[in-house]
Length: 179
Image 1 (cartoon, rainbow, N blue to C red):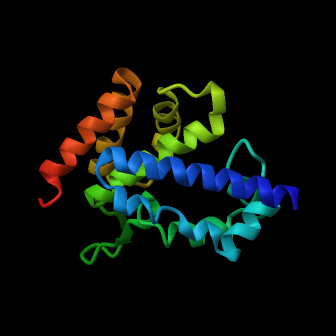
Image 2 (image 1 turned 120 degrees about the vertical axis):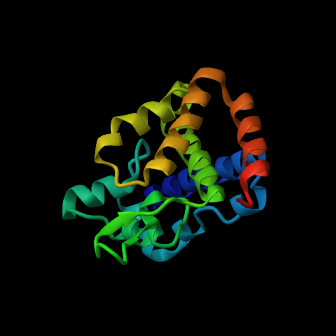
Image 3 (image 1 turned 90 degrees about the horizontal axis):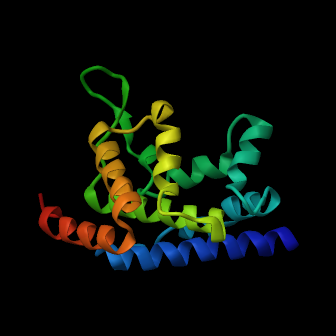
């Protein structure tokens, strides 16, 4: 029961941070629906069972079974995860990453910043989301344009801070959302 309460508090704190970030980035309404699937029993119960507090419970499930059922469900329902955006190329018949729509790249940015804040706690620094992103860059199956855009915003966050980065993203979205 204590793990379930801890997990609930963690995912709710994360979700509320993402919502705040989405409003700052100009996609506030979209942010209201962020990660609702984490409250579904198929995701929540696994999260509570493997709750660690300092990192995703999906890591523990993956460690035990070689994959995470909760993660597979989650990424298949939440378009702010680049893993959602893969499909077979009709010409090559090979699975390829697809460029993400801008609003979901923005939500992904907000998600990564919030996750760093939650898991780093009072040790959080604006460099953390970029460091985490770069650490796994070589093993990531993501569209190059999507990856480059996200990395540029994470770099801006590390160098110029949150206020300037969210202001930039909001303006960028206004200019590019219909293109």
